[in-house]
Amino acid sequence: MLHGLTFRRLLDLLRSSADYESALAAVAHLALPTFGEWSIVDVVERPEAMRRVAIIHPDPAKQELVRALPAGWPPATEDPIGAPVVMRTRELHVVHEVTDEMLAELARNEENRRVLRQLGMGSFVVAPLLVGDAVLGAVTFVSGRAGRRYTEADLGEARELAALIALVVHNARLHRDANWARSRAQRTAEEATRQQRDLERVMDVQSRLVRGFSHDLKNPLGAALGYAQLLQTGIKGDLTAEQQASVERISASIQSSLALIDDLVAYASKRMQKLDIQRGPTDIGQIVRQIAEEYEGQIQAAGLELRIEVAGGIPVIRSDRIRIRQVLGNLLSNAVKFTADGRITVGAEVRQNDAVSNSGNAVALRVSDTGHGIPAEKQHMLFQEFARLEPTATAGVGLGLAISRSIARALGGDITVDSVPGQGSTFTLWVPLIPVREADGAPS
Image 1 (cartoon, rainbow, N blue to C red):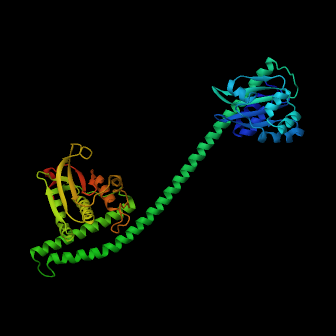
Image 2 (image 1 turned 120 degrees about the vertical axis):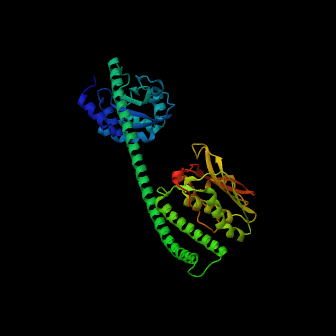
Image 3 (image 1 turned 90 degrees about the vertical axis):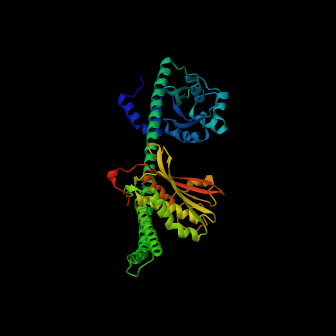
């Protein structure tokens, strides 16, 4: 039984073990001076590394000597005497008489040897600090009397004290790890909150900026649309059939631009999470031909050839024709922008794509060009917001393809790209093949 150690005192020490150093010193002090004149506690901080946590001496007159030791007398794992031996063997280590040769080996230098002689180091016993299979360190009880014969009762008490100190070390480490984990979690949460606030501020500024620009853009576009519609009604005079068709294309292009501006505002403020999709009967062939006609003038002005390839047998599907027009227009606009010579082909056919349609079939609307192509290592950047493959380019802000892919996915499809540098690119809008029932009506 430990001398003078009550059950309540033991519980108090274990509870206070969050205060690592103080608790170890308190437990090691319990055996003094009955079991020895002073004691040492060493702990394993990490593999192959030990730390001298405490040197406890009850004599206030020798505290100055004690304070001088830890910094200049660290334990070394290769020491042939003392705590390192115990940590290797997991067994008690008893030295009944410390000789001058041992003292020189323990002290390592003359100043340490002088201090140890003044403290008194005649004999000692070292007990391992064990918790399960783990060796947490060692406690050394030092007697100033050489030749002291430690009894079995003494060694049993040393084991009890070592077990108690091992519990203190184990508890302290659990407290330390828990506190560290809590602190880290708190720091992570605070950092996430800060980043979220920063992101919200950036998004708010971006949203307000886009709304401001959209207002300034929509006013002149709205006016232009109004004049185009006046021409269409004949108020300004009758138009020839060719002029009427041209004005209709102008109106359709302006309406597409206004729709794009509205979506840009929605994208900036809601990240496209609530994009409005209005599904109804949609004639893909009709859309391809209309959008090609709208861009025909722009394509010809760029000195390019336009080809339209719509496969037969494409059924009327249930989708959002306005959104499909918007994406197809964006892809055509990009093709014109990045094609110096050659041709642009816009087409549609039914193809297999298990990722888009449960039936295995989807409608593929493709825009191909004979531009300079896109290197494979840069293709992953195409659909990123504000990404620009050519930093020196002045046209666009790098949102068109990001918006288009968001729309495609909102429709239940996707956009893919197939490109070879020097040969051109093909962007394909995949739309689920959902045939329209007769009750759904015909497309407008």
